[in-house]
Length: 301
Image 1 (cartoon, one colour):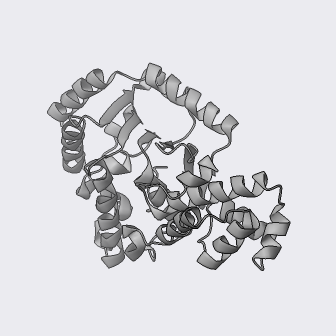
Image 2 (image 1 turned 90 degrees about the vertical axis):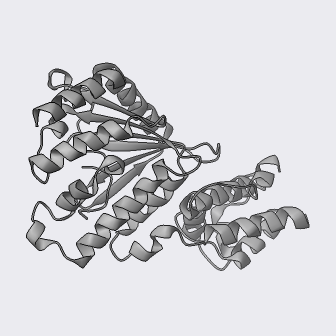
């Protein structure tokens, strides 16, 4: 299932105030990680920290994981408890709090997106490399408007309504991440069946293939296709891996399912999916071979 949400996005502490070119989700993760390091360096337990801000150890855990927003008063109290008294350093942290609470562009679509997908969109905005494997659909960031509409309406154009159209606009807005200044690199692998599945009908599929040929001319976009003969060996399902330029942000694997999504960031999980990505790169046709296949398929439609 493609990552789209349509069917359901010290020296260390001195870095905290640095410029982070990303979305609020990523900023929260960075700030939470810095606060955790300060707490551990001060040898203070989560329960003790939680009591200091009239909360619990679970609240501190959620803050340190970047799962919740931050209050300036809470962070100021924690900094005092952790021994951070320098005015400049404290100001950097509090600036980070304010930035982490800013609303992303997707805020106007939150009524259409489940919470778990809002996190993905925020992380996607901050990634430096997006790696994606799809078995059923063209990757969301590479879909045409017609293709998006067909997916969003479940192939029932007569059921297209205003919420569906807003979901289409949301996807199109997300795609702008690939053409902005300092755009991330997208490396996508698709199963051959994706290019034969007539989502929206043959005409829509043909224009979609033309769009893939156009997009893969961009220097930051790479597409590979796993032919039928090698299909199904490297991975059992679709997933995305997000990698970040900021060293504080861990790599994240995103796996979407009908009822929600999983975010995997343990080193063992990242290593496992990293090996899968390496295997896919070997099993798939090269980017040039993939473009040749796309050209042949376009000619045959």
